[in-house]
Image 1 (tube, rainbow over the protein chains, first blue to last red):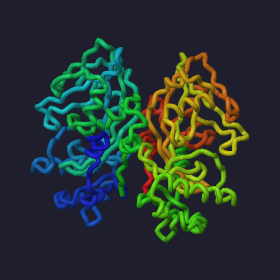
Image 2 (cartoon, rainbow over the protein chains, first blue to last red):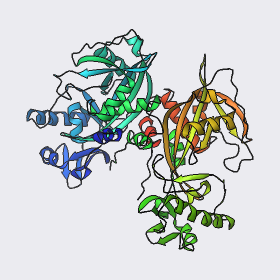
Image 3 (spheres, rainbow over the protein chains, first blue to last red):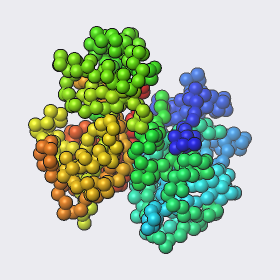
Image 4 (cartoon, rainbow over the protein chains, first blue to last red):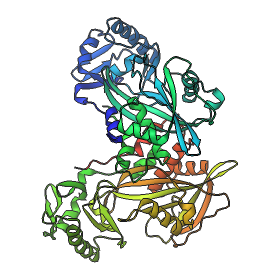
Length: 286
Length: 286
């Protein structure tokens, strides 16, 4: 087992199974071929041909596109095609700050291979014997990755909420970190990956934050999504990330970047350059 | 001007002008087509054909390869083909820790498009009004990038010297930082790029280090390669990196990663994800 294997876990996909999803001539994502016939039925919203899927050109504004796509997605969800409805709106965009082409239900993003964004935070403690990281174990009742280890705080980035505000909200919900403390979190970078999932393709960018926590602060969960918080010496975290699949796959990548930044994963590691490059992997859109 | 433009400055090349350089069937670099006829003359060392350049298969060990290549390079240097002789040996390898296929004169690496490695350090001071970075100006007499701004300490990575030891050596030579202080530098990551230069192709990996310096420490140069050291507020550094070409191109990238790690380049910057990916650019070898 190796760090590069954790990166491969998040970056395994076969683009030959997908065709581009375009809005107003811009390629925004990827649609798996087996999903295309299900969209072809809605010919006033989606144009499906051998080149891929295009949003109908009559839909020429953010509002028109969002309003036209929403009932299609609800219909597909009612038929059990789209699963895991979240009631959370995500932007369809290639860049976090670009004007999104439309907004749509979070659960649908992977069916269209849209890039999603999230905030992930490493909450750590400096003890006399070195850095310790707060590691939550996801509730065994969670529909996704039950019982797996996670980043101290992590959440998807919905439309219309700033990154810092979203992080403060997630800090409260997931770890009961008060807003005044959460606002001390420092943005430190981003990791990107592209995973093929049951629903389709998931190119994701996770904005990373570090928060040094006081030694007497103990996180606790307020939304029932975490079973327990473990305070682990960083060497143990590194060992578990490298040699097991106990962490939720994308959380491993956030921790690996933390290990590099803190000098715990040293530059004379044989895979150092490849790891750094793997944490910034790009997905061709076109 | 933009941060992405600085990344493009270091990543502009046309691979169509190059063919692979192989040793023992492994592609290690790239040779520009106009350099190939000059190597063809040395048929007992280089096999030159339409597929590229291969080291002669009779050369089957590190020593045999290094010993056979050295006189060819010296001949080409005496003819003025290879310029900028350094008398410093670099490994020919795709990965810093892999066993190198051979060693060769540093000045020749770009002619063979070999990946080079370096150590670059941000020496910074935390003042009451924020972070300040020590910025050296290269001597106006230096053959390469005279008068340009540089990283606090930076140097190429020769064969047979550890990264940490190399950094301590460069800290002494370039900034008169005592070894005990230099050893506090923390490895924080790596940036990679690939530049086309007059000599050929230069895929480079720069291991990045941060060193917090005491407010009363003033760096000074001991090898005549630096004209002056400037202590600049980090916002001024960011502005000059973004909007000018005053910094040596690859040093801009090291500073951009520092700005991200310190939260000075914030995640809601429109180009944040693209910058992070650009600082880890890969070069296809094959």
